[in-house]
Image 1 (cartoon, rainbow, N blue to C red):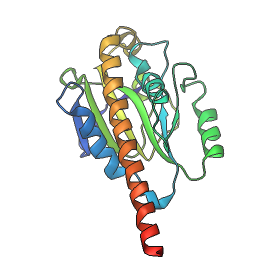
Image 2: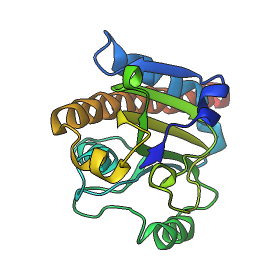
Image 3: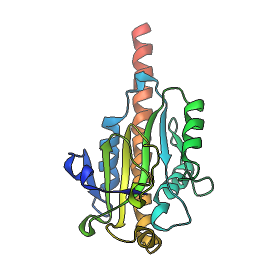
Length: 205
């Protein structure tokens, strides 16, 4: 779980969208598609969904990972599900494992975060890594070339208790929108790959 701090507020984020906003998933797909490396880069694209199913508020990441694992989002790779979560206790080992499997991966870090009351339910995509554990004062390695975070509750006091008392309905709905956005991003990415393959064939004829 990441704290949505003043550091992020000062930066101009590429996108901030309410999860219940019309076409929210497609706005996420638009933003992600612009940030991913081109198909010609042949760089593996990895989504690392951080969190734990032992805390309602912190379950956003593994919920997204589980929803994505049920879809065909080839050629993307997804780590962190309800069955195999990535959290504070295993994050460093999982990151090493992922880098051993994928050469020079382009990583999108996904995590829940806390923020202002008026921002609860907002999904944001930004440049640079997500900083898991900062919302509950934990020192963990940053994750991602870019990040996706969902503001699931308010920050400022008793963060562990706040996370435990976060509504599952909100977290699940946010997870569905984010996973849908990633799914549509994968469709666009696969279309670009097929189009590039067709163009190469045309040039060789």
